Length: 366
Image 1 (cartoon, helix red, strand yellow):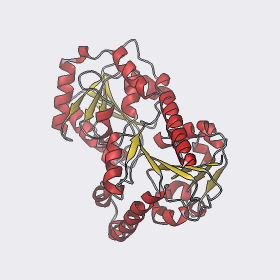
Image 2: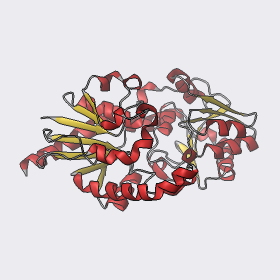
Image 3: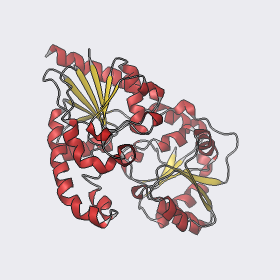
Image 4: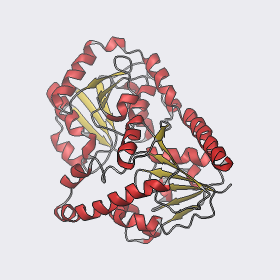
């Protein structure tokens, strides 16, 4: 059986690329197709496979500014000749599922999210764009929206990474999706013997993560908050940070693992499609204070592995911190770790294997 794995871009190792790693293990014979490939930022597991790129790879500064070529990606995908493949697995949160395949092949799409800048977060992205970009966005995004919805019909089976995303697939594409949570390396994290006096945030510093809420809340609380991550908001957030808030930028994994294990709790004020960071904190035995929306509702168990706050405001987060500190003894590290292990990488791998195998058998018998 010939297998093709299609991923939007391979430039670094984040949640989507961790899914590709597991797919590479499940299908060691697979070829990989992507718009842009930077082998320096990709794991050895993926690099063992043949990687083919679209013409986007040859455009100026594509490895760094690949997202600026988004309007060209639908055309680029449709130039890939995948007619010889029996199974095509697309990994979607940027343009990936719109490939053309043989009529007898099975196309499975693992959807991390329908493109946020095209659908529900369009106005947020446009508001934060430059003047020229704001002017050209409406016609370009209109075209991308039509293409994105139309190419959903090219997929035989959808898998969503959360029930939250499955609802959005139903809303935007009018398609059903099975749900398989993405892989989390829970065994890479361990609890610490002693907890520190700080709270923690980890992740990309972009607008929708709402790091500004956390900074304002901890400025007022005058409690220590450590923020690990890099992104377009870094300098603006540093200007807002008071003396108790420390932005460390990008850090090595050993530092991140240590901070996970020793923080009082993880702060998670954004709305995520799933959110692997809260589970990494829970695998370290630490609770999570999360905004009550999105994927966090499927990973955080209130009063057992964390607490929710209801509004994306500093005031709401402050109330959650105070409630947590008044009841911190209720959160048992061993129980939190046990909950996180339900999302382990091995479980994801087995579920993907069983699901795709069943669909292949069904497709072949029909």
